[in-house]
Length: 142
Length: 208
Length: 122
Image (cartoon, rainbow over the protein chains, first blue to last red):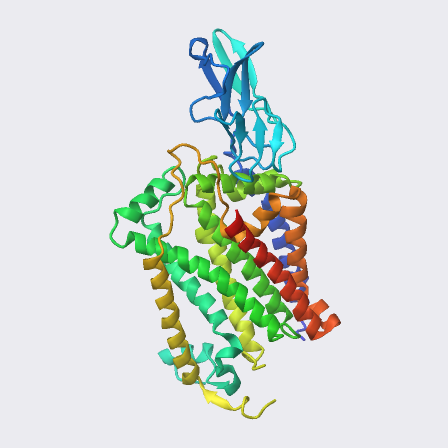
């Protein structure tokens, strides 16, 4: 054994170094996760001019979004076309008068109530706000 | 021991003599070796694909182009796909053989656990590769996967870190691309080397 | 150990066999690549498909998801099976080689069987 009269032995330095690395490693987790999730999708929104609102009582899709619109009894209704089972995009089939999910076979009736399949919750309506001649559609909060 | 020749590295990583019993085909069916061979093919074809594949919105378009317009593009993609599926199957069969020949007994427990980890990672690599195809099915697969992860406590962060922002019609994202070609493939490569080293260290493949 | 089995053989014997296996497997791979067309899935540009099949590796979980609640099909059953698999060297020693093999085989056949069920019965 060396007879240095140092403040710390080599073993202590190594031990300290190892612990310091672990602390730094764990400390990095928070900034790294903020970095990697920075561009997370904000809730979807869409805007449509009143005059372009579909006037059909059948569900019509708005472009490439997950918003489907129809004229209901009390004005415009919007559906958020996400299966309540595991989030796949559902689409309305006018021939079968049902919403169909391609992933596990869930089906909903035209008002969004589950008819068949692993899904148990009804489809969620999207929020519709009217403002200055525009309709503002918002993805429903989870 | 040896002079510093180019042969010495090769001699270092392979044993000079092996037990006669390990030569029997039925000892291993070459399954472990074939899994590694599949990994090599996947790496080479994967790098070739990287020259043309564009992750994200252009995924499907760049793949169709590669498939139809590029000379041998379809072949490279086919080889990558089939080597991938063969790797999952051969890793699984290798596991069955290992259990049958009881090669998990002490002192090989660590290597067994490493092997199970490799199996899991291989399956995840298959899944992430599937997402990178960029078709509608990949979008659905990504939706399901992301929602499954989100259902865990603290899962929202995990889900985004792994999946990025897939669209419902396209599961290919830059994040998934990084996981597939670099992080997961890198871990698998490293674990394989560790796996082989441990086999060598515990005396090589034992005849039954 | 059997003296014949433990006799030492030069590496080249193994290498020769490895070369042969390699080329046989590569032949199989190229045969598959050239013979069976790998589909490209449905383009994101066309009309939404009505059924999106999952990748076959998760076929077993997909099959379960179609019938049983999510927490069971996607989390509990797979994680439990994985835990059993990882712990094999330990519980295998307790139950003996015959039962270790039977249990493992049963578990594997169940998962493989579900996968095949999904592949061929949708």
